[in-house]
Amino acid sequence: MRLNEPRMAIASIGVFVWLGGLYFTIHGLLYDVKPEFRYGMLGLGIGIVTFVVALNPLAQRRSKKRDGPT
Image (cartoon, rainbow, N blue to C red; front, side, top):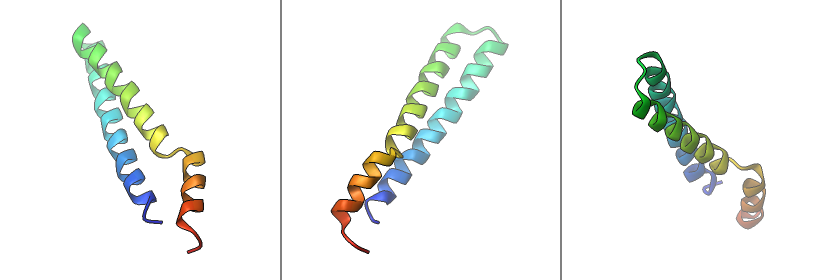
């Protein structure tokens, strides 16, 4: 179970990066600021990829085999 705690922390960081990217994307669209929009979209992509990779169900199955019975 200890192996899941770092994954949850990384996934929460990914969510915060995603939220920041969402903010900058919307702000860039509303005020027509192209660099802010582009970096916001980059943040969205990085945040979503980080979240999905950190909480990958296949990786959790493999880690349970390594942990042994709890």
